[in-house]
Image 1 (spheres, rainbow, N blue to C red):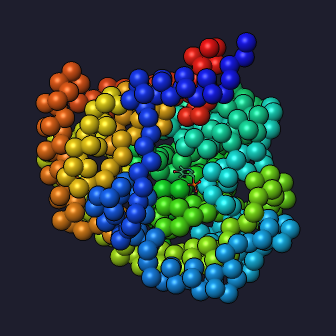
Image 2 (image 1 turned 90 degrees about the vertical axis):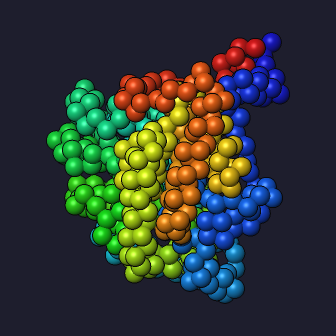
Amino acid sequence: MRPTLHQRALAAAAQRAAADGVRVRRTVEARDGVRAVVDGQVLMDFCSNDYLGLGQHIEVIAALQEAAAIHGVGATGSHVVSGHHALHRELEDELAAWSGYPRALLFGSGYLANLAVIQGFLGEGDACVQDKLNHACLIDGARLAGADLRRYPHADADAALRQLQARPAGAAMLATDGVFSMDGDLAPLRQLALVALSQHATLYVDDAHGAGVLGPFGRGSAAHLGLGPREVPLQLVTFGKAFGGYGAAVLGSAALIEHLAQAARPALFTTALPPAQAAATLAALRLVQREGWRRAKLHGLIARFRRGARQLGLPLLESDTPIQPLLLGGNARALALADALREQGLWLTAIRPPTVPEGRARLRITLSAAHAEVDVDRLLDALADGLRLVDAALPAEAAPVAPAAAAPGEVAVADAPPADAPPVAAATA
Ligand SMILES: *Cc1c(COP(=O)(O)O)cnc(C)c1O
């Protein structure tokens, strides 16, 4: 007899509980920059993606309020029916001017944009070559497109080259995170651009975590490495991270962007972003360009954190971005440290499989220009104390996982089920 969905849900819940894999949604009741009231407790936030502290900037809020007062709270339709607003056009034009790309196209979210880009350009018989640590929505995009998805070991441009050489027929896209969302390191974009060029493949960089944070005027990872539209023909920027809001845009040539606007299903069959949200992003974009001190302050805090962490011998990964993962290994260890820190008033989230490979659970520490130096020092003290406590309580797992113990590329992420795939046990129950 076929399993009911109820049985499947119960079996999956039991599996998650047994593996310390249950996700908790904590409720933010109030927020003031990096301070938040979370489930009744005042915490300092070290897990948000609001890297520049723009989410509550008075100019951004005022832009949203004013536009909502005049234009309402919704777009009333998709871009191709009734929803395309002058504020959307203004934002697309300013994004193009800022980035140096001929055109920008707005999407409801980065997730939707990645589905659009890959499904819009690739189909059966085409190759989509991706870094193993790419964000889940790049993987989902390739699956949805029905393309031949190949994943190379993390940051291994030579392996990407071999995978493209092995598939000479059909169109090809080489897709990578610019800054890796759970590790914080930069993709080797210069090498990847050469590989793509030599193989007639299009390099697509998802710069959700680089945009606003890296490069001149916050233009992102590619600009930081001296690359532009010629080397990286397609790019994604998202507004839910350093821009402090919500939404995304794909940057590219007029022909590529027009193709997406005409043909990509997530560009056609969904309601446009609220115009007021576009107004907020416009205000944030202007601050990203004008207030370079936010980036300077953020990078100063990153350097301070890494210096302190090195002195304390904390197991950090190599990263010069606001994403500073503390590698802990097992799920129980990561959860215990997050609990210990919460008792000290600090909010960090344990990141576990399948978001990261098995045995590489971590605390994903994120820094923001809204933090102060004393906040970073407090975090370092709390991490040192917390690790001592956890190692005393969980001696079996006490040995820290050396970053080199498992090269990320060798971990079979590709074989792990996606977060919401039906668990095998339930499927056969
Ligand atoms: C967050 C993220 C996305 C998704 O963007 P949303 O706007 O949150 O949907 C895509 N790619 C990467 C690398 C991300 O970190």
